[in-house]
Structures are given as structure tokens and as C-alpha cells.
Length: 195
Image 1: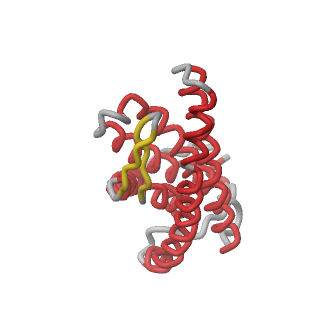
Image 2 (image 1 turned 120 degrees about the vertical axis):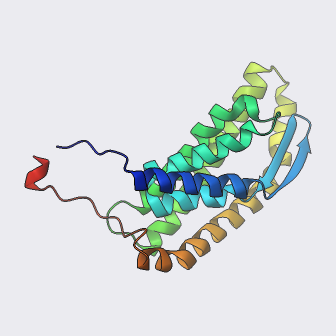
């Protein structure tokens, strides 16, 4: 079988979506916590949307690259840019993998969105515990208090991210399909040329 390569079109799509992720992450509200700054932003919506529109790898790369570049522009987040890349890549990858396996349907888009958002949240919480409790040696009570205090904000943010991602996907998909930019995913059939 021939190895799949990234085409110029693929690279362009990843770059454009990464730019959208970066721009959307700049639409934010900073929230100070005892363990440092956190924020509520629009970037996660575009991270998930990237996976829904362009599949797990391309969408995941766009989500990871755009988010990592955002972190590099902020001295507080810059040291963790590589962790952000991995976490946001996984968010876009999970959403894209579920939504684009077999024939795409509204149910798969919603499931992919929910799994991408919740998967990211679980990974984020695990990262915070590892960083603050095991590496920085903060008392467990402090770490737990901060995680619980931001939980209500996070849950509301996650619900908003899920609703907005699905609505935005449904809003723009018909135009993107008509323009030939995306198509429903179906596994590629093997041809004689591939053998």
C-alpha cells in the first residue's frame, strides 16, 4: 500500500485551522487561582471543530499547533506549550476519530464532540494533579480545593463548548461541502494502484 502523504492542501487546512484556534483562544476571560492563572476561552470550540471537519490527525494537529502557539505568547503558559500541544491534539483527535469513523452522522458528531471535550477535561485534571501535587509538592488539600473551586466554571464551559461546537459544525458544513473543502468521511477503498 502507498504511504499517505500530507498534501499542500492538507498543510494549508491545518495552518488555517491552527490560526483559527489561536485567534479563538485569545477570546478569553482570565481567572486567577491559588495555584496560578486559568482561563475560559473559545479555543476549545475550534479545537473540536477542527477534528469534526478534517478528521483526527489533521484536526488534532491544527488544535495542538494553534494552542501551543498561543501558550508561547504568554510567559505564564509558555513552559507548558508542549503539554498543551499533546492535550489539545488529543481533544481534536478524539472528536475527529469518533465523528469520522465510517459514515458521518449527527449522532457521531455529537458523540465525538462530547468525548473530545470530556476527554480533554480528564487529561487536564490529571495534568494539574501531577504538576501541582507530585512535582511542585503542593498540599493535597490545596490542589483538591482549586480543582473543586474551578469545577462549576469548567462544567458550564464544557456544556457551552459542546453546544457551540455542534451548532457551528452544522452551520458551516453545508457551505464547506458545497465549496469542495470537506466531504463526508468514508474509509478509502483499496484499488489496484495501492497494491
